[in-house]
Picture 1: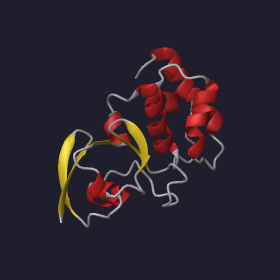
Picture 2: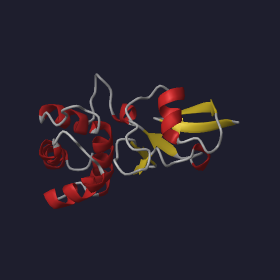
Picture 3: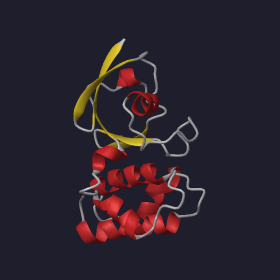
Length: 155
């Protein structure tokens, strides 16, 4: 079955079963590898993407649920030539160690900052509560998000 999805501003079609997880289509069919397969149960946050600006776990979203929604992946936030402020802050704060959780952390942070341009540290930590980082980079991740909130306000 052909299903059309609007991903990073471009409408794309994929031949897949309606119950196929969005994560599989993004990675396998569209070759967008920012979102990672972590747990497959929506508990780790590695697969987070934005749907209409809200962070969701793409491993739990079935593609039939998504048309005509706007899906934004890490690749859709910024480019190599023009990084998104969160991407730049994560680099500046050295907030990625192994990098596996980074995409999901940035996506959740983008959602938070779009809803609350000046979050407190406690609000940032609360927003990231569902994202796991096994490397222990949480303090640098929080600093990176706080940097964007302090420097730019609404992103």
